[in-house]
Length: 415
Image 1: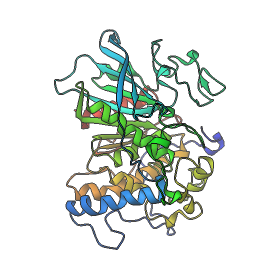
Image 2 (image 1 turned 180 degrees about the horizontal axis):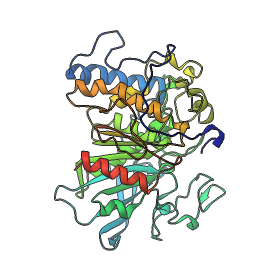
Image 3 (image 1 turned 90 degrees about the vertical axis):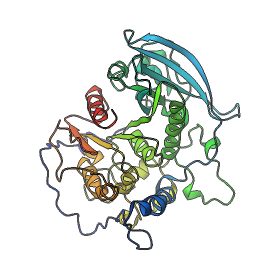
Image 4 (image 1 turned 90 degrees about the horizontal axis):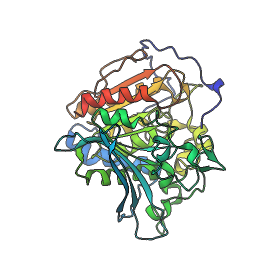
């Protein structure tokens, strides 16, 4: 779902120098504890500040991380080792995470190269918007039976149909990814939790509210999706074809917010690709850009994405004890690539770059470089530093051009 084009303007990016932030915005220092103590060592970061930041993001934004232990049972629905012109394998797995038969299963679509190292292939894990069936023409792939976004090809009365098969292959170009030597594990986000107020899914089983737990902090949808990504990682690292040291997470828009949160809360994820993730993800909560989404607007339009506690900051995000550079800092020292589109001002591309600059001191504390530039790169020019950045011409979408950039960054940092 996007907002009117009148909110989106032409954004000609060359090399943009950043001026000082408006005086009214006071960004928290990721290297200062709540009690004012300075973080001066990697040990202090790992043992003190990192857990503190995770607590703050749970209590003030995304809700509590689901604490219920899952009991996964995987069932292979089909497997074809002659897919992609004989270069790869395509299979689908039904994954049941809870013993309760009433808990719905999730369906993982897996594409992997047949020619892969003994240690296993690097893998991109992520959620998709349109169902696994939309990513391939293969008639064996499961069609979601629950609620589906109304603006997808082949969707009728919020239900997916066979007309949607293969209609989103450019969003997840499986054959190109496999031929580049990478595997993919993807799943329709609605398998974990439907993207609507009061939607069904696994929230009831994954994070039931415990007695006396304050309701404003209960698990919200983006946190539940991030938990779902971690369950996909659980599956992948248990497979012989996967190199557990080279697992990346990727997502677009609200699923880009999910990807960054998943990376921040799981150190097994080696590389993070939050694409056009904007407010509540890669973009700052504190900003004065009228063309970018605000905390109040996102909480009003999508109240289920974040916890009720986040809504306290609708009218004054400056009171937030955290901002999104600190979510990025939780990924340190791992590589992260922020990718954007020039016409997608709603996602606040320049604000995202500023978040990378503000997270860099944490990377430097841990002995590595962060973003190695003071200005945004021009359109189509990949800044391939550990904190990387790329912006292309075009609009809010994920396409084959974006994947070429994902793969180039992955080749630099995961191979």
